[in-house]
Length: 321
Image (tube, rainbow, N blue to C red):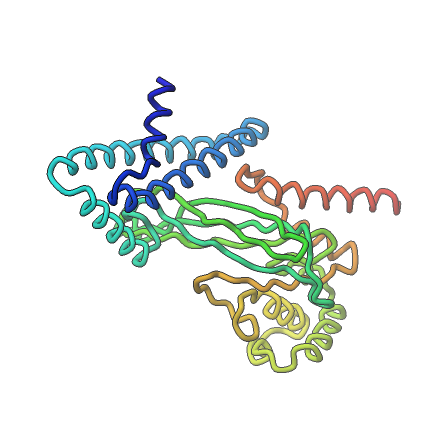
């Protein structure tokens, strides 16, 4: 059995004629997707067994069943089409159809939904120095049409995480989901960044400020960003929260366009600037906002980093007492 599997794999990458040359990129892409899924599955199951993430396991099993059905149907269609049509024509039509669905709603055959990648850089807002080791987590959701009475619904699609390198750069990989439901689209739920001793992305520490602290930040931001569009909005906000709102608006914008205006385009590029947390109160607020409600095996490093920071703050409080 293993010998047959080995021979089948070898045959897929042999180039003997023009047809094999045309099919080779498609086969390499399929091989990459299979290898990536196997690696993700091994990492996910190790984590799920350790943490008892039963909900994640059930979602994974459902996706695997749908994927097996899809592979079986595709294989049968391929076997029949080889007898009736030219394989090159079939592959060409298949590729063109997937390019159409990819452009229409970022899916392959209206079944495999993808989004990404997201590329960016995390730097210190004061010095501009890169922040190494910041954990970046992304979450995606599927928005789908349920029925005419309830309208649209949404469900968790995927989660991924990565860590910034010594230059502060990160690449958040593609999010994907097998979802055989028509009229659907895959979008990001959030992109979060956490680094010890810093504010988070989206900003969190402003939630711990008093009115005096918010006023100090308001004056500082007016000097640093006097022409930022944020000053033209929010004039109806109470003065106690105006500085907090301005701070959040300025540092919530993390894309590559002027004044960090929020906009998703391809490639998705983020220029994220984090302010250093000055007090333990600010750090505790960041931990409180970023702490995952439930340990998730798709983003274990993010949850671990936040929990480690929480333990450090607790030990500092015990030492001070």
